[in-house]
Image (cartoon, rainbow, N blue to C red; front, side, top):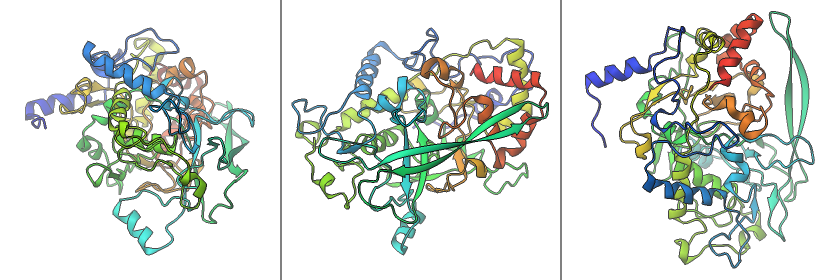
Length: 479
């Protein structure tokens, strides 16, 4: 472990990450959102798929192999392709890339005929007995899975098995009138599950829709020191500013103890390897070192699923996805670079940045950090980064509530989403749908869905004159 920073170095870091009060020009190093790892490649549809710019030539091979595993299409077992069999039996996608489209943001289905592959429904129930209550209280589990369908609804299955069901979404339009008279229509979704193949859901079922989040900058977020995250937490709102901010406490499968969570829409996972392992088991149905169930998310009630052939093999540590495979996937995920900012010195962008800061958005969307020196990856070590997130949980109000707790996160709390790269969503993914379930069709709608602790900041935006509002959106599009 690296030595603690000296007082002089600590003072230098604090000065570097202090929010600016000067909006007459760009800040030093602001263009490099991901520090030295920032991608300066051409801004196009592949903008989220470049490796850390400071990666050595020797390590690029691991990145490319990791990319190959991330894109690998898995098939059902047994198959002649023993390095790629073991899919399902129930699953949401055949590869990581099928959800993380071009390493970017997923989207809700556009119609009943559209594939929902980049969005899924998490499932859980309230604890039913003292054992389950103790499990949640200890932090060893974040949720109690639905007894028959497990932790998420798998809407696909291999041949000979039935998919668990289908997600159905209906939208209700709601009009919001801004202070200058501008009318904005928000769409409120309602989720139901149809075509259930394994009997009724538990009467206390809780569901949470989730689109696949962007993959850029994850290694840099992993390298933010726990102390820096906890320093911004104010669970009882002791300073009375209306912003609490809580750390989710989640189970670390390797260290066998509760640690701060930072990945996932509710910060339900502590590190990239664990996030990747849970995803490959739950989403694709593959066994991995810390998630050894070859039947993935199949429950004891799904007998045929658990008895189906699997792809566990001696060649891969007795698993379908070996430790080496998972390390390479985590390495790839850790090194997807954040694109450089654009148009920083545009007067409208600078004005929008000032609106963002003075409206209170940075209370949660904290602009800057310096990553730890002893980061897992050398590319992420001691970098000045600009993710615009505090990685904390915040009450976002009833409008965004899913009423499904996860770990210490309540049914109204979500982790502050990092904003870096958000302005390139349309360029990479061909849409501008934001928030955890993609209900917002543009950045303004996403802002207007903010409530709870963010209500005051949202009202500042509602009250803006049109010119200032457009400047704010122009600033966000440069991130």
